[in-house]
Image (cartoon, rainbow, N blue to C red):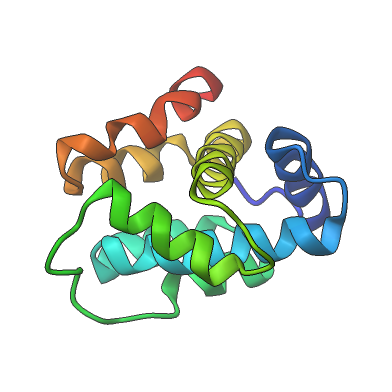
Length: 134
């Protein structure tokens, strides 16, 4: 993959419909921080290697065990809370789908497939746009 950071962030901002790049960066990083908590350390490392700069760092930052209740609702709620600035769960869901589709479009489809295989079936809905991009 190794798309440069600016190119990937521009694409994500466009997909997520976020006009301000600083806000797009925050949304992407907070989403990936949360995503990293839901997948194994091995898969977080594999995904982190293909993501440039702070994005790769974000997905590998937390090394805790997966949440006791790994539900999509909880995940989206955590993403919204971390993004702050009044982010609603529906926006956080859109940001999650946009970052996964962006990663897939920039060559990270294989890594995303491995992470997807670890998650409960209800997480499938987060990956739908990523399939189109892959």
